[in-house]
Image (cartoon, rainbow, N blue to C red; front, side, top):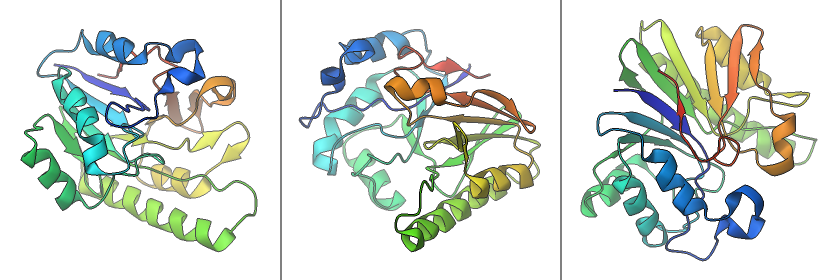
Length: 229
């Protein structure tokens, strides 16, 4: 039994938005995902850090989630900025149940426990520039509250693992609100996705002010889930 994480599968088996058009590492990425997951076992757990499906609706995303469901191991998903299919937890659970999808759980205002650790997280947000400050502030407040709710759900568990879609640090940009909540709850390890291509070189990895960051976008880690525990 082991814990893994990967972000940004960007599946489009039921819609017309394949990532192969970006070339490079994305060529034949569906096959690469299957190969990357092939070493996982049935009792392993993998956190999917957002942007799992390009589908706009449940109908468009169904084949993507059937694909994910067939991959070995249990999966815990959180929201990414391109998960337009995402709706309420109740509706998503009903969608999974109605379609016999049994290996996917949802990380949203809650947490999951793995051995002596708590799996916590949310989508996150990045406030870049001064465009639509009021709108950005509302989203930031919402995401900060969701992260706090997730960490609170961990209770007295000392080891809290944080999974985000957006990077809390990127180049010289720091999302003070999100980082502040992690510091408040004693988070020591954080994994995130969202960043692709040339942006990889600007991603923050390693320890900064007591928190160790790892960037796990699928194309960055070769479509092989990163083993955490």
